[in-house]
Image (cartoon, rainbow over all chains, first blue to last red; front, side, top):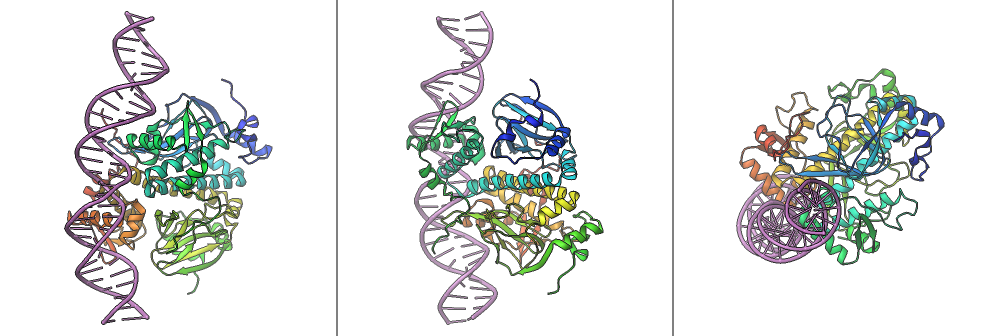
Length: 245
Length: 245
DNA sequence: CGACGTGTTGATCTCTCTCAATTAGAGTGG
DNA sequence: CCACTCTAATTGAGAGAGATCAACACGTCG
């Protein structure tokens, strides 16, 4: 597979991403070491691995996770094209989480001090990385709210909506034809702190109620209103309604 | 209350914090607008508030949280001296979470574009902020693992250990005399996705078993080994033991 | 002194987990 | 083409961790 130069990175043309100056793109190109292709289900970063480099997910889906010693696994968040991987660890540190692909994926691999060089040579990109990191945290915040305080039904509705939104933003039709849904029910369970069996039953219940449909590896939203109501998500920016008492 | 110049910031002398050049301190001083004092239980940032500035917690305890419209609350993480607050929101954005104090607290308030100025004028401090942000995310990751996959006992053990560690790092004796513990059981419950009643029962169980003690607003660790075993926390860097089958 | 916030405990109730079994592809090898 | 194996999805049944409901104790405070 031939490597695509940063200048022609397919992600750059998406409306989701900021446009950069030619200089900035050149800088990124300098720091990029190579591309790495992984098949579905393969491990990019081992939990506890030291000296993992900085990656960017160029295409495909993956997820970050942590496990307990008896094997219980919690998926921390799902990674889609454009996401950073490995900002967390200080050089020399053990990675606090593993990363595994959900689909065949391509990653851009950066030299280990890329994060610092990026800050040093382009404060504006450094600022963006801080912001992206903070934004990723807010995704984990959302999941924590779900797992801590939402019922199984509500959690699943929330996950479907949020994943759909993210995936839809990456495709031209904005999700009209559904979005890829490469997760198994085990992934959904591990992402929401539920058991596999209960995840299955809840997923089926919502599907039978006509709220959504997973078909052939794609997710279709059939009743967004009902899902949003279930998830108790409020439109961007509007403050949550507090209880009247 | 007189304001302390950054040069004499009490946090700077703690071993936990990086030393900065005189220039960097001068820069921070420039961007700092004022100090703000809040009593225990007061709100620093309202959920959904727009244009919240950037803060730093100079002294005291606080927490970030999100709520559902029916009042269910999830505490995302606890904030101790030295923590940043408000890196998440892009300017103009609504804050995705609220911040409330647990004790009387003092915050440093920065002008809204401080984050950008810091990056622009000191890439090295910008880099540190990225790292701190990533580190805060990893705290949320830890909590998500707890809430998603640990039992009530395990969650509480985990929380006690992690809070103790953070608080102990801020005091001279390293926690030998216990650490402040300004949380009510409701806070513990909201931080761990448990009900108040079950939190109480579990807390009492661990206390009766001699694992810890909460006395007069301070937390004492009585059997760290047992707590660590319960929490399934492994020492820094050692990879988790995977199940043998 | 009554109101309120916090902690405590007992008694149910229920949501979700665990255990068990079945079905439906997809891939492999003979 | 047909067993055979594996993974993922599905469904039923029973069990249990944790939620909810209800009281009460204690200290603080106006």
